[in-house]
Image 1: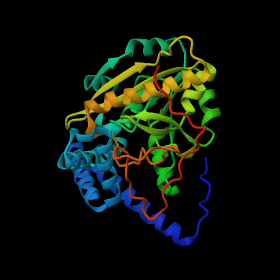
Image 2: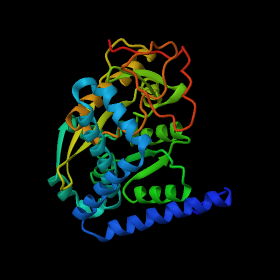
Image 3: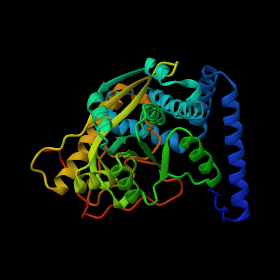
Image 4: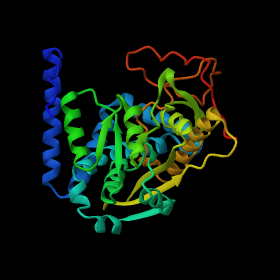
Length: 339
């Protein structure tokens, strides 16, 4: 399939090509050195980025304050934020070196422990039933996709495009070497098509959804959430699992956690949708408690606020990077509670 030409002003293209050259050069370097050295280099780059990118550093520290309150002091939050930046760059190493890190299914299984509803999930796959796998910006989510591909699970990921079209093509090509993936545009129709054929669609469901989201408590603070998976699951009675892969130690070993969502009886469409989203966020909180440094704290999860919300010290105070604050969400959006 021939890539469409990029249409943009020349100075944008020049900047994108420079970024692309840096990414490809870094990828080449990572692929030519031992994985342990690559991980050490990634952590060093993460520490440098932590020092250079003040807005994201402050966002991560502020998110940790909102999530954990007084559990950590200022120095503790800073250490966790720094470790989260290191983790983010190790994720890139895992994407580039996935075949070198775990070249066979046998070796992958030797490095992996699975907790939760593994047998139920295997029964679903053997029976040819599809559904959604809800994961989060936590742990090694790209590695989880590689593992599913090794296990011959008919698996498709939804990828959010990055602003640089050249880097985006490179990332999509790299991902597609391990598993099927499509972009967010047209995700509803494509997801239903995959599931009806017995496939599974993985979705990162913990991004700020702006004014179009549903507000769900996350660490006790309402967070605007995309209802995409919950709406389709409630509408078509689709199976949903929650899944995460936590990296253990420096030698790329993993703990996979898998939980099947079981909706309570008697809920209507809206009730089931809200219950799924709240159960999912409560599950993320459980996972984050196991390895808080492996959550991507640098993204502004609580950026959009509901209209009429009373101010308070528990709410986030983000840098707006020269832009006006996001307007409050319309009052019609609800904040659900788990029954």
